[in-house]
Image 1 (tube, rainbow, N blue to C red):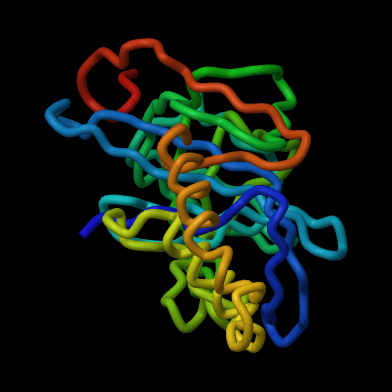
Image 2: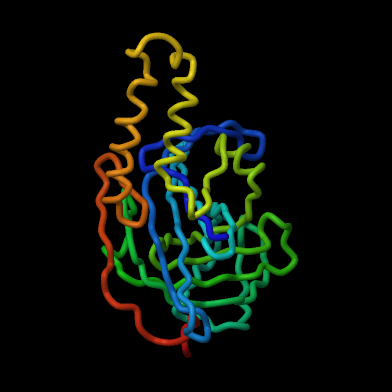
Length: 255
């Protein structure tokens, strides 16, 4: 079963991360795609940018094919690593959170940015492709055992540590699971949450909110049909879709 992100730009989520309460505003989303190493299968995943109540940035990765939700948290590293200069199997010395570690390059791959919506800043300007590097941190605690560097969200002296989140962990951090099965339209999930919020007023006359359920459902179905990949950005963010044809072979970056 494949999954999709169940978030909306401008939405606010509330929960607790490492015993601290936070609220998160969904700022934007990117869909990336690449070929597997044999070039036979197209892999797609989502990256959602969120800002917490302290103006700190985190990302959520929705790995559609692996059915995983992965939290990306910024971690300061020194020196900064250029993903273009890496090779699989290579080791490097770096400092993360002030501690010295040896990191091993697990994977490097080039990906197309297939769709972007909301507010996604790129320090190097608009981009259509990116290079991603996955690093294994030797001897580190589980919270820091894996970090990633994405060229498109490149920050000076900063990478991202990754943590896979179960549905229970998602509910604790964000107040609810942040994904849905691919076959459940986003409109149905949004309708379900809307009905839950107005359920106390569903009894009574025809003027109750229940009267507007059918028109609301029709409207949302139209929006979903017009939506690009099941996504309808809100607010003042921009949106584009990269319609270039993806070509080439393996997912790794050849050296």
